[in-house]
Amino acid sequence: MDKVNPELKKYIERSILPEYEKNGPSNDLAHAQRSIERSMKFAATVPDINYDIVYTVAAYHDIANHIDREKHEMIAAEMAEKDDMLKKFFSADEIETIKEAIEDHRASKEDEPRSIYGKIISTADRNITVETCLARTYSYGKKHYPNYTDEQQFERAYEHLQDKYGENGYAKFYFADEEYENFLKEIRALLADKNAFIEAQRKYIAKQKAAGVEF
Image (tube, rainbow, N blue to C red; front, top):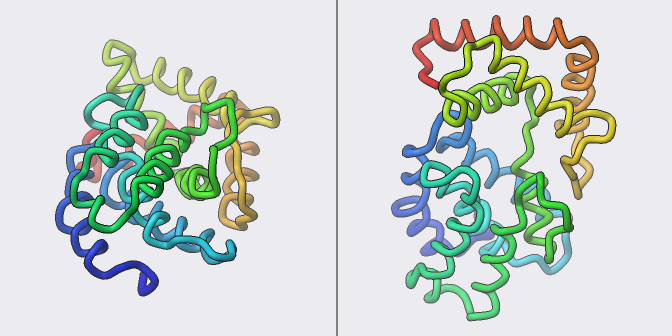
């Protein structure tokens, strides 16, 4: 992180990242920090990249998840655009780049991100462990389908993840990354057997609940 303006970093650590504590476990502070770390790793492979923009986009990308999961990228982008403190560090054009990158980061977006910054956060935001994937899909289901039984939640998760990570899934990736490639092999192997997938998620969620995790 030594390539990021220390004053910008201080502001984001104090005023932006704590907002992630309002999100559920699938988009919490640990997720934001992991996305920042991965974004910086991918940025290091790009010549003449602006690390301040990379850091800011990653810090903001899921900040509005607790407000409206379905529109969180648009709300987060608007929050960044209206943040007067960011105007002390970025030009109007750079603010627009930040806004667009945040808007473009969702895996379900059909078009490619409009800039390299959108591609970086889109890639950095992806799941890289099966456990995280199981937790995020269950957490999402509990919030949006509260009347579903756990078995219905597991069925829904299986169908969703097939659409997202199956052989013809819509999740896009713009940088070579061994962690993601390993995850993709693992999740596809699990998705190859629906019963095995559901049993794996059932056991993992039970373990998380026993440890005190709230979904």
